[in-house]
Image 1 (cartoon, one colour):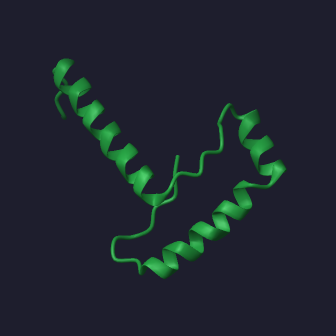
Image 2 (cartoon, rainbow, N blue to C red):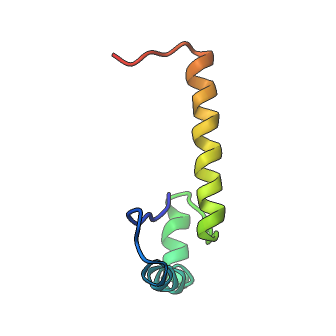
Length: 72
C-alpha cells in the first residue's frame, strides 16, 4: 500500500505531503492500528517505493506469462 500523486506534481508539494504522512505514520496509535490489520508501517523514500512497484509489476508480468493468462 502506498500513496501516489499525479505525474507532474511539483516536488515541494509531494515533499510536504510526505512530511505530513511520515509524521502521522509515526504516531503509536497509527502503527498499532495497522498492526491490528496485519500490516507494518514502512516509510520508504519515493524512489525506493517506485522501484518496489516496478519490481512487483515485473514479477506479476512473469506470473501472468507463466500461467498463460489472457484478458477477456
